[in-house]
Each structure stands twice: as structure tokens, then as C-alpha cells.
Image (cartoon, rainbow, N blue to C red; front, side, top):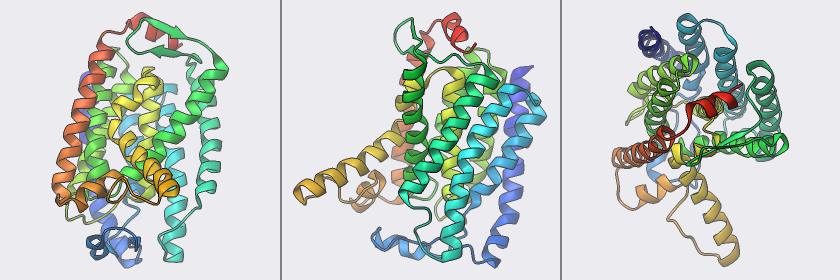
Length: 331
């Protein structure tokens, strides 16, 4: 029954996203809500200026409908939808400032981090309070649980803020974030099936449907971009699924491509400040490959393959976990 409901959630997510996005594109075009392109980015991207953005605004309502209609309004479903939506609101505010001010900069970095820390506090309160998740980690590869509330909170601040920002950095080529995240969502669906988590199954299935539907319009050449609204929503969704499945410490492997994108930026900045030299042709990492001669579609396929391998490796680790131990951590 749960599997059938998951298929229904996927179908609803896909259908509603296609319908909503198709209607949203002309509205955004009429409102002149077009993408602003950074001048320091690849010159080939300048032609994308004016492409409708903030398409990720369809994610939250569609996910809520698909999840609540198939799995009901329960604490697990509410937690997952809220975790993604609250982070998506930060992106919505950031996009709004960019569009109304007609510039590529919205919220400043410190403002984003400050808002993220507030959301992290809310998400942790919901996870530990509403859902009843234990403030502890499963140690991947070992049948061990580490229950240290303060340590858990400290690490989760890094996990939640890091995941959402890394997802945001990954959204730099047509279809890149939606395509790689689609593979990650499939991984979380399999984990949820193994551990018999109906909320995780329906949420990840709905997310697969939403990402498939949006990818249809977002693939190269993109008719619409998701904007920070969508990238922050996706980052929050992945972090929420990791919390529910108790794979928080495995998230860097599951979302390896996010990590590589974020690391490329950090390495580039640190090395350039210290030596004046660049490690990559341009960061984030996808621009390095793009300037190396690969087409956008080729970078997308390469990154999806890397994501598929990292997700498979993560699944091998999760498959060896003790279900009873994970259930204990879920409260």
C-alpha cells in the first residue's frame, strides 16, 4: 500500500509541477522576473539574461499537496515539508530582492547565514520536539549510535546550513541541480523503503516527480530557472530526509556533488587569497569543466553519473545498518 501511495505521490508531483510551471513561465516573463547574470561568470551565460527565474516557487505548494494527499497530515510529513519550505523562503526573499532591484546580488552572505541559523533552530525544534527524533547519530559503517545532544545540535547546524548553501552553488547550469538532486531523491526513496518509513517514501517520491517535472523545462536550453527559491528548498528537503532516515553523517557522500561544488569555491578563494593563483579555471566546479571545453549537457551527465556512484556507495553502507538501531534514534 505504501508503495502504491508513493507512486501516486510521484505522479501528482510530476503532473502538478508540469502544469504549474507551464503556467508560471508566461507570468514571470510578463512581470519581467528574469535572471540577472554575474558579469564575472562564463561569457556564454550572458545570453541567458532575462530567462524567467524563481520557478522553484512551485515546489512548496506542489510538494505539500502531493505529500499530504498521499500520506496524510502527520508529524513526519509536516516536518519534511516544513524543513524544505522554510529554507525555500530564504531563497524566495533572496530572489525577490534580486528581481526588484534588477541585480545579481540579493541577500548579503551574512544575512543569508543569519536567517539560516534561525531556520535551523526551528527545524531542530520540530525534529526533536514534534517528530521525537533522538539527538544522536548513527555512525556509518558501524552498529554504533552516538547520543550527545550538544554535539548533535552543533553538527546539525553545519549539516543544515552547509547542505542548503552547497545545493545553491550547484544550481549554475541548465538542469544541473534538478538532475543531480533527482538521483539523490531516488537514493532516499530506496533508504525509506528499506527502513519502512512511509513519510520518507512519499516525500522522496513526490520530490522525484517534482524534479522530473521541473527538469523538463529546466534542461538545456532552459525555459525557466528555479532560482534560490528552488535551490534552498531542495537543500532543505535533502537535509530533512537525512534527519528522518538518520543518515545525517552519510549526507556528504549521498550529496557528494554538492560537497564538491562547495569545496571548489572554498579552495579557490583560500588559495587565490594566499597565492594569487587559481586552482580551477573558475568556480564552482561545473564552470571549471565548462571552460575546459565540455558542453552544459556533458557536464550535467558527468555530474549525474558521479552522483549515481556516490548514492550507490551510500546505499551499500546503509544496507548494512541495524534497522533497530536506526529506529531507536528516530524515537
